[in-house]
Length: 404
Image (cartoon, rainbow, N blue to C red; front, side):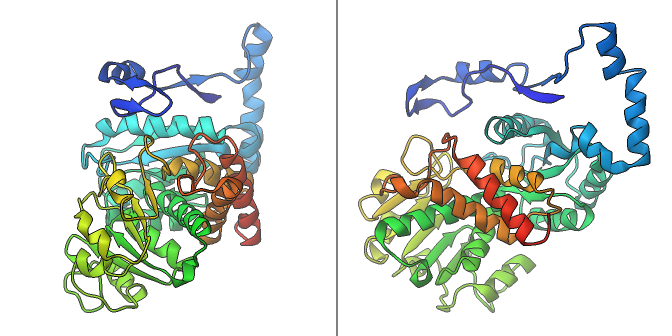
């Protein structure tokens, strides 16, 4: 059995769309009517013989064989190639805590992307609970039905606890895409930007505005990749050792970031910084960009409204990226997650390691290597080369790191 994608209008925000006609609200609702997913059979049933093979009595032989050797489920069911997209609806896009039912269209869309770009079957699973242990217990009980877990749109800081507990409880790949998918693509984009400018990542100070799921994950992967220093901010300012009221996650980040020992807010953080990465949804004063190092890099990634308009940022920055499709250098998670999960499942990985994430970032960057320019630091989200390249790199990294 496989998940099929119903023919539908593109589901993007109203307004101009690069390479196509404007999309209206009517287009969007029409494109979602009846949902975006369906189930299609992979074997025809057009005769009594077909029926006896696919269902009774033939199916009993397969069930008996699996009962005797559980490993055969990987060959004779779809479970080992099935990704469940799991959400509690507490941090959906820029909409916030809108609940499980309202989050379902987003999860359906994610499942469509898994099939379109990664060739993986995927189903949305929205849970009407925000209790971490209840979610873990639910997925543990459902484990025979799937092969990997993509966590989506779960609010911080619970998302950190939930991911960690699921990784401990399940023997299959688990990844919170809002954290690690974003981090992988940000690293790939920063590598591309530095190659265009001939700069060394290890000598740069990066400012990350936003210490939620994406901000923390970006800080961690950039540190692992060897960035010089990171200044991480939340709504109260720079995260630093000794600051009151830090969560355990932020306390950890205080010890691993901010080598410069900065305190204060965004003005103090941006002064002399080489790179700005916006992941908070807050608007910043463009004059602060003047205080950064010469020809800085600006990733204003909040959607739908970047922290600073890219045309304004371009007056101060040498390279500008956003999360939007109607400006150059779109940093989009679809560059990462289909290939990451495909590679993990291809390799039979039990988990998704840091080495696999770094390999994914390198693979994304490599696809764009021969076409790099200030307005193309990552491949297009629609580039068909990306997912296969990421999958191959992730599978190899899984084998080398011993989780395959």
